[in-house]
Amino acid sequence: MISKIEQNSLMAWIMALITAATIFYASSLTFAPSQGPWSVRPYIYHVGVFAMFSFFLSIAIIQAQRTKFIPLIAILGVMYGLSDEIHQFFTPGRSFSFGDVFLDSAGAIIGLATYAFTLEVRKII
Image (cartoon, rainbow, N blue to C red; front, side):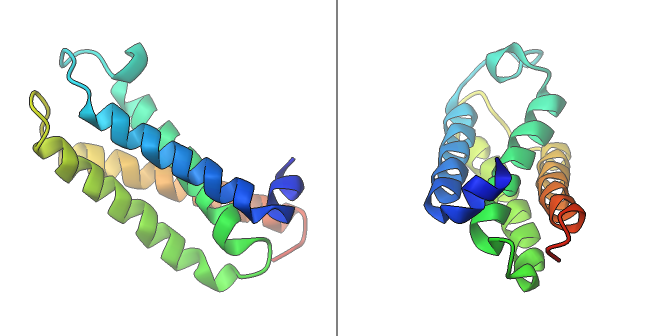
């Protein structure tokens, strides 16, 4: 499955953009503090959705060849997490949280590491 997406980088870009749009949309929602988007625990949501975003972003940028871009992908994932929290700061009923930035960053690193691991397993790196 991953090799099919690697062959069509447009699909990876589309999936990364859909995930980024989903993150942006969820950040615009107002809900009770004890509930996360779609009733998922907030820490699972933050790590999971940013891992997915970073995973597809990694496929789109690296395409099994350009591993020199790994630090860039990590920085982009962390910066998107930070921008997500800044967006929430300006959303009524939401707030900025350094804990969420940490969870978003951890998810981005996990997504990147997962793709890098698949490259290693497939002996592409």
